[in-house]
Structures are given as C-alpha cells and as structure tokens.
Length: 351
Ligand code: AHR
Image (cartoon, helix red, strand yellow):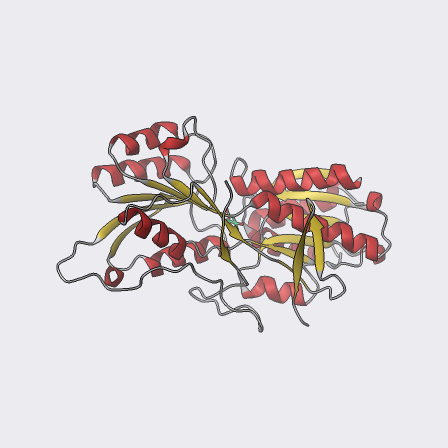
C-alpha cells in the first residue's frame, strides 16, 4: 500500500549548490534521531550501492546519504558508485555480504536482474533497503522495503499541466507534437515517466513523434534533441525525463536556431522536465526556457535512516513508501492541476 512519508517542498542544499529559490525551504526530513551513539556502542555498517553520478539529482542523492550516515551519528557508510552498470552493483552487493555489513542499501540502475544477488543477501541474513528506483523480483520477500518517488504520478502531473496550459492558451490538443527524451531504459524513473506520457498522449490526442534514450545526461540529451529537431520539423514539445537532459535539449534548440519557450504558436519549442534539484533548472524555469518541472526529491538519506532506526527497534517498516512531490512552473495563471480525480497545487516560481 502506498504511504506518503514526506511533504516535500523544493530543494536543496548539496555540495556546490545553494537553496534553489526564495520562498521555498529545503525538503522536509522525516524525524529521526541525530543523537550520537553511546560510548562503546558499535557503529552500524551500511553498504550503499549507488547508480552513478549521471545527474544533479544523483549527486544530491549521494550527498544526502553521505551526510546522514556519519560516524558521529553511529554509522559507517561504505559507498560504492556503480558508474551506471548493474554488474558493478551486483559485485558491490557481494562485497557487502562478504564484509558482513548490517544493512545493504541499493539504488538500482534498472528494475530487472536482481533475484540472484538479493537471494544471496537474504541467505546471509542482511536486510536490503531499496531506494529511488524499484526492483522487479519474483519474490518481494527478497528485500525489506523500498522508499522513493511515484514516477508515473510525476509524469501524469506534468502532462496534466501541459493539457491545461493548452486549454488556457486555446492551443488545440491535436496540435501538440512531442518527442520523449527518455532516461536510462528499464529504470523505474524511465518506465514511469514514459508510461505517464503515453497515457496522456492517448487521452488528449497529442502526437508522440518519437521516443529516444537520453540516459539522464546533458550530453545525451543534447545529442538526442539535435537529431530529433532535424528529423521532426513539426515538433513543438520536448519532454525530457530529467533536468540534465533538458539542459542538453536547450543547447540543441539554440544551436538549431530555434527558441525554447511556452509560446508554441509563435514557433517556440516547449521543454518539460523532471527533478527541480539544481539552481540552473530553476533559473531556466524562471527564464521561461523550461515550462514545467515535475519535482523528484533526492533527499533519501534521512528516510533510510528512519527505516534503519525502526528496524533496530524491531518496528517493521512500510513495504513501499512514496515521497510526496510538487510540480513547478513560472506560468502564473495555472495554480492547480487535476489528474486521476485529484487536484495538485502548482508551485509558481516568481520571475
Ligand atoms: O531515479 C531518479 C532519476 O535518476 C532522476 O530523475 C534522474 O535525474 C536520475 O539520474
């Protein structure tokens, strides 16, 4: 069952980044004890297998874990960067098992391919906490619990924003021609965001011209967008599955002599994106280059700590814990959107 565990607002403080815009505070953290361990108490060892460092979101997520699991709070964190390769994650998990860590935390690159190694962790009696993306396993008993985002809902909200924007601007829905710059294929974030878009395309009568992988990076986002602009002269919306792809898309749009913006009628190309983590993304939103961002909250460190504290105290955590997230835009007229019978406020980013 879904349980919303945190009211997010906007982000954040990470290394080399400041709080992103005025009027919004850092994402709320779940309550957890910051108390130093009693003298002589053993540190709790955590092996964390991170996907990589492909995006600003990912860097913020790593920092959240590093800042949370410190020695003075009673933890020893073994951090392994898998450089986007599942095989590296599997190797890291096996090393954690050999080292007899107390907990294994995994941010899985893709959903498939985890059964064997999670079975090994289970046999070793080590609880496994999945963060961010999910795993598709034959037996859900192979992991203790998961915490992360509802990627499909993020997409549904961004698409509801686009539909409503078109209605208000009297742009016919069937004039919308979209290219989807997808994330890492097979990752929950990609699966959810691509599915949410496809559902909205069907419902609203939009045209999905193409889906191409952008791997959540700026370089791939730029490359893919450049190709798509050359191939589809009538594209008017670039749907980027994260902000780093959007930064690349903006470069490609400019290089093609086009203008990024919401004024589709005047020939501008609308960019829609996800995350809302970096100052640059918020600046682009404010400047009208990105039209709408579905928030993806990376501050999972305190959430995982809360889970571990519960487990240490014999409390069974929720199997699935979904983070509550916002949607951001600078278009002041649209302050609320509806999807699946529910209303969501739009956070307006002032000029
Ligand atoms: O899984 C979360 C996604 O992964 C973020 O949206 C993206 O930026 C990251 O790399």
